[in-house]
Amino acid sequence: VKLSSGITDHILKLLYMTLSFFIFIGYTGKLYENIVKKERKGEYLLFLGFSGFWLFLLILAAVLPSVTSSFDTVRLYQTSLLTLSVFAILGIKKITSLLKILIT
Image 1 (cartoon, rainbow, N blue to C red):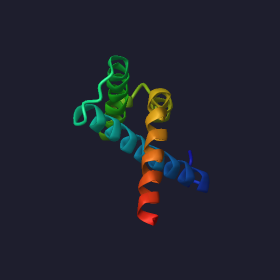
Image 2 (image 1 turned 90 degrees about the vertical axis):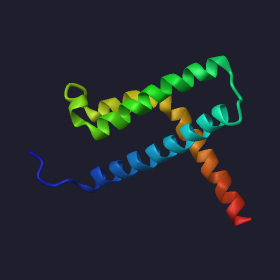
Image 3 (image 1 turned 45 degrees about the horizontal axis):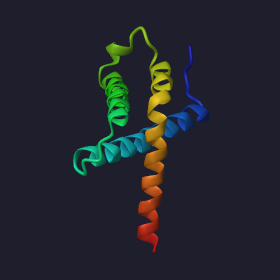
Image 4 (image 1 turned 60 degrees about the vertical axis):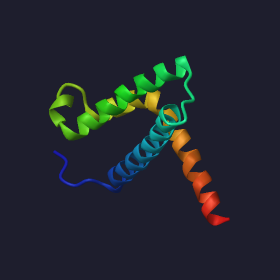
């Protein structure tokens, strides 16, 4: 039984939260480009839909913990990062470009 969480647990939670933030920014940015700007490509829409499923599953696992009763939350997060990591990189690029605009 683990009574107290160490500093590494807090660092991991912080990293998970920042990575989730970048994934959300990257996914909504690409979704905006595909819906509003109508820059649609067939293969990319399939990938966007598949990634949307994993993002929905992560949100559902956070809201309803009974969904992950047989599938650990950390394992679900690591599995979903196979498709969502692309959006984390896009989110980091979008945030850095916004910061460059604000600085100059």
